[in-house]
Structure formats: structure tokens, C-alpha cells
Length: 136
Length: 341
Image (cartoon, rainbow over all chains, first blue to last red; front, side):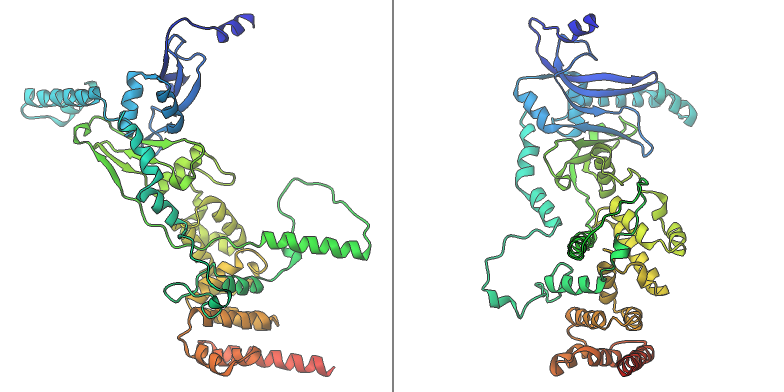
């Protein structure tokens, strides 16, 4: 119990506030919480405030559900919090921030790879190209 | 960070805010009119038709609903508690009855009758670059606690890169997931489908299904309106008006029937049960909603009251004139015999 208390009460020198995804859930069932925490804390450790959540697995309707507390997000960004790259990409997809350049780059790379595969196999076999698409 | 302020600004002014408020029929506050000026135009809207929320209409509908205390306070399925007995004087009993009537009036507040909501199809951004990157769509919900649900931002990023506002069904689902309301399910139960509603009606459980419908759907959603209309149609077809009398759904049913001019069955039922006042209220409401019909003009000219009003209405407007005449005759004979004896 004393060890637990000291972990939670720990203070850090330096570091800054980040808004990032903390992983939770069970084996083969991830679930992310969008969280404002000190950068030096453990990924899933004590955080300052939870700002939302993201379920990476699609639900029965084929949607990935994400909730974002925009008001508190704006507050922390106003306090000078930084964002982790996945958080930036998520907010770019949501429309809160502009689209992340890496999202665009990733899309371009994927398209380039798909075009290369189609070019490599001149008469595309449906099963073959699908397999390549999944592994890529 | 420039885009950060965009949503905030858009929420405070502009069409989103105005559109959201207009959804609930909020208009700019009208300038105060003199007291007498509204007398002639009572119950009239801008286009000349009275609406559900007008005081005169509500008054009539409320009078027709009836106040059967036994039915309003009949035992609802709850935890079993042993009954409590109290010894009261006459005066205390009267006060307890008055209190019960006041509570019954609150229970009988009619749920709103609104037009069906317009479907949302608003695209916020189109990013063709993202096409084919994701296989599923993302739904983002704004979880800010202080904004009303109607103004909440719920957006969907489709796999083809389009960022659009969520449809009403998606909105309702997401709001129920993050801000659960009691009695509401995330996915509406299968009992609200047409084929299953038939079974419910066969069991005479119209009131229960309407209560469930109010808990599950928003008043302006298509499903709410559809379920209510099916229920009213079924009641009207089998003349089961007693099921809804003295409940909060009666007013809505009468409004629906009067708008579609299907009032004959209800009128006959009222006369059979010796509720002449209710019958006259019904016809007055009919005249308010359809002022151009012949019986309305005659009633206006000759200032008819009571039974005469019903007779004129039966002759001019109704389809089942014979039945109404018969019912009126039976009523008058019963009145004659009761006054004679």
C-alpha cells in the first residue's frame, strides 16, 4: 500500500504536459483514453484529466467511436500542453486540427505501393492483389 | 492552431446556433401586444392554423382527457411495499384528494407534438487524399458537458475522406452511449418495428408502447411519429378510446384525429358514455382547426351550443351520420327517463 501511495504522489523535475493516448482494455481488446498527463509519467499511469476516449475496434455498425471533450482540450492546449503524434492525427481526422502531414504522407505512400503492386502484376488476379493489399 | 477557434466561433453564432434553436420552435420574443388585441386571433398561427401548443387548444384537449384518479394512479410495476393505511377526517380527506388531483394534473402533461425533423446532410470537409486509407468510418462526439444535446458536434469521417455531420440516428446513438438516459436503449428495441407493433396492439397495450416510445425516441424523430400514428390508427379502427382516456396521450390522439377529420368514432364513443361536454369540446376544436368547413360557419352564425352543435356537425361534416343520430336519441331518451323518474 505504501508503494502504491508513493507512486501516485510522485513529483517530477522538468517535463511538460502532454495529451496522449493511454492504453487500457484486455488481451486482444485495446481501448484508448485520451488523457492530459505529465510527459514523464507512465503511459497508463496517473494523469491530470481524461479528455476523451477512442475505441480502435469497429462496432456492429462498422464505426470506430471516439469521444473528445473539446472544451477541456482547448483549456489544456491553452495551458501549453503538447500533443503526441497519434493524438494529433486523431484530432486531424476529427477536423479539430488541420490534417496531419504524416497522414497525408502515409496515404500517398500507400497509394504508391498499391500502384507499384498493380504495375508489377500486369494482369491482376483478384485473390493475389487482395492478399498484397492486406499485408501492406 | 487557427482551426482551433473555428468550431468555437461557429458554435456561438451563425447558422448552427440559429438552426439548433429554430429546431425547437424558438422565435425572437414578440413585442408585447395590448391585452385585448389577441382575443380575436387566439389560437391562430401566422398561416391561420392553430397549433398544438396554443392555450385554447390545450385547454380543450385537456378537458377531453378526463381525470380518472383510479386509472392515473393505478399501481405501476414497482417494488412491492406493504400498503399504508391512514385515518383521516373528512377535511383531511378532501385535502388529500386535492393534492392527488394536483399531482394527477402534472402526470397528465401532454408530450410534445412536433413536425418530423429535417435530415442532416452537411459536409464539413472533403479530403480526397485520405481515400482508401481507412476501412471503417470514425465517429467523433464532442463530450463538453455544458452544451445542450441539440447543439453538440457529432461528425463522421468516412473512409473516402469526407468529413460530414452525423445523421439524426447516429447522433441519438452516440448521445445515448456517452450521456445515457434512463429508459432509453442505444439500439431501439425491435418492438417498435411495424410487424411487432401489431402484436402489442392485439394485447391492448397501447399506453405502454406509447410510454416506451416517449422514453426511447426524440419527439421530432421519424420513429416517434410513426409509432404514435400507428397506435392512434389502431385505436381509431377498433374504437378502443378508453385505453388512452385519462392518460397523457389522449390529447395527442385527439389532435391527430381532428387534423385528419376522423372524429366520428370518438364522437359516438363520447355520446355513448354521456360525456356531452367532451363532445362539444371536440367539435369546437374541429371548428378551430378547420374554420372553412360548413358546420363551423353555421355554428359561428347561429351561436350553437351543446346538443344542437353536435346535430349540425353530424349533418354536415361526419360520415357516420346515422350512428351519431342514434346515439343522440338514446342519450336524450336516457335523460328524459332519468329526469322523469
